[in-house]
Length: 302
Image (cartoon, rainbow, N blue to C red; front, top):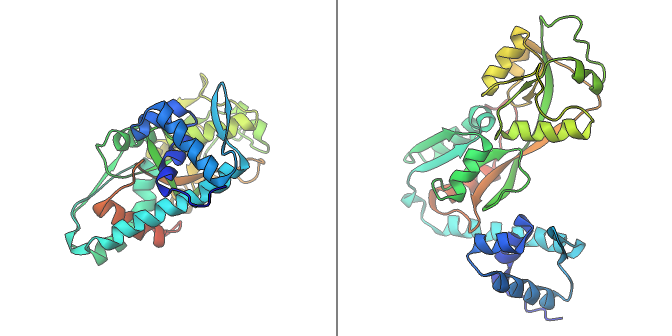
């Protein structure tokens, strides 16, 4: 075993881990498949252990690979911080962020305000799109950084956890009395309000309901609505029940429009993640990401 590990191999390792296939990782890091395979072999030889299990469906990390991933991500974050810290802050320019709906409306504002207080010269440009739109924009180089919900991995970008969230089951105060919700199977008897395809909220909810043995996509009696605001209003109007972020539901409960439904044995948790290019972000985007990661917001702060 050679302890002289070449740190330049780690980005390739992370790309393979992220994509689950040598071919996809090769495209992401702009190398040939043989070159990627050779880099992984060099890393395994240096560490004296196997990092990936190969199968017809792709590759998956061994326990050693999972342990290395923790350290490799720490190295990448340290390099990102070094780039952000070494660069002079007086050269900060425009901060452009594309974020999914819940994050843009309920998570980011307080952090942006705190950042702007320290760096008033920075021009802010916050735009909103669903998770798939954000990932595509970062992957294609149209946005330097994004924030998404619902995805565990995404082709062509690196996802880094930021803050946690939980989707809470919500019902309108004036909902029909027949909509009794005591266990998770009762969700089969009531109309459910869904976000559109491509929404991170929908992806997370679909996985959770599938795991609970409940329908994992809209049926004929359900409704698909294109924003969290529309879903909240639909719940309040009695169109159906729905799941709302813990970051957004509080004011609506306080106003008496809706109420949360506890229990049912169903927990729908997710993590809001940074979406950055596989090579990392730079400049103002990296500076803001470091600031926001150091001082994450909490529900109720926005």
